[in-house]
Length: 92
Image (cartoon, rainbow, N blue to C red; front, side, top):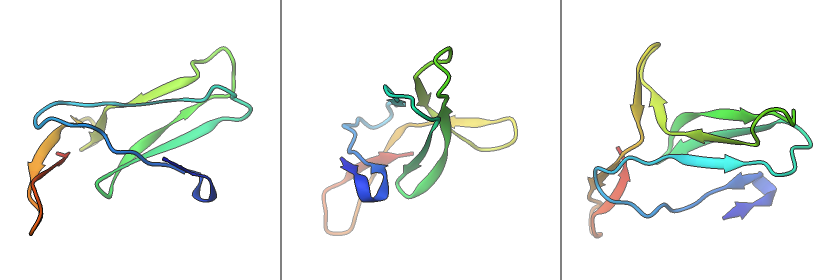
């Protein structure tokens, strides 16, 4: 879902507990550099920049969260239960 007033794209991702996932995005116009920031379950997971330079790729991918200076943790779905609701799968 694109929310123009906030310059925000948000979505629901079909999931399966224990499965890793990645987030891909592209900029087909590339009139300026494009910054993208990933927020999963309210947690900041970093971002990436797509250059406006046509010699560079027009897409990027985010597949992990940094956990230390030299360590990362891949995005992975996990099981969670919410009070009064059916269990839901969220990013682990």
